[in-house]
Image 1 (cartoon, rainbow, N blue to C red):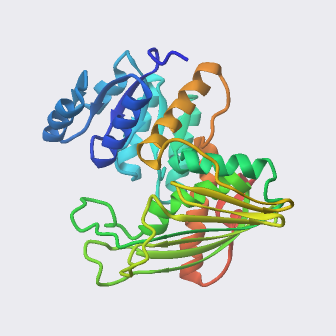
Image 2: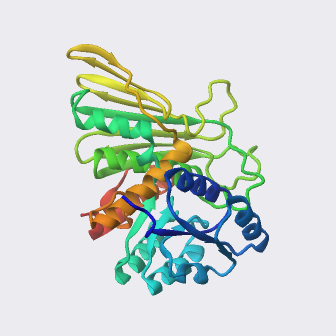
Length: 344
């Protein structure tokens, strides 16, 4: 597919934008330019990435005739993203939005509504779904290599220092909403609709620069009967770290198991007894970002449904909401409680 007609405009030129721009360069995608409210950052990123167009006027970038897809890497808060969504709606531009869509379910619903009412495509960059190793896992899952899966565990543990970051970790919600969302989106993609969730959350008070939760454990029941345990521990001082992006993924089935990170996948089967170590190319950073955008563009070009749509992603944000509600109230929370009629 030729990507020249699908010009990308990057809104928000902070840290994660560097990963996006590297991924798009590697994938041969067309970047028209970037925008940020910080003039010094705009100048620096224009020079670093040789951006053809760079501005502090976000609407100007979105209105640019060559921009067909607005890549939103600006902070994931409603007051920041809502104007961007409205400008995209005004000019009829597709939206590709860095995860999480928003930290709160009602705010995420509002953003999705803006896109749907304007009839513009909206995909959330849940890049975990496009990690080459995890795409390899999915292929073996769909082929039934380990039989019927019944349990998944994902564990990420490390020490996270957000003391110098301007907004990361500075809100009431952090680890589950901002980092656990990677894994929540992944299991929803793999295993379908979730039924209920029970979570434990906590905060290491010695962790400077963080206001919200610094560790989270969320147990999820799916409509299919599948169960999952997602552990995000960003206050671990021990010697056996599993930092993002090499968290451990374990999936058990009645005929085998998959154990993996983003760097290695091992499938053990019992019928027949075998160990398979499939080859794949690419890492999480930056390849998953390029894979996600390329998927979106190909679907737009061919008029096909795309993964991680804004509407579908509400299930993921609802799972975040359920996790925080569960931890606060000490009980299991259902999908229907959070989503109401939209649960269907």
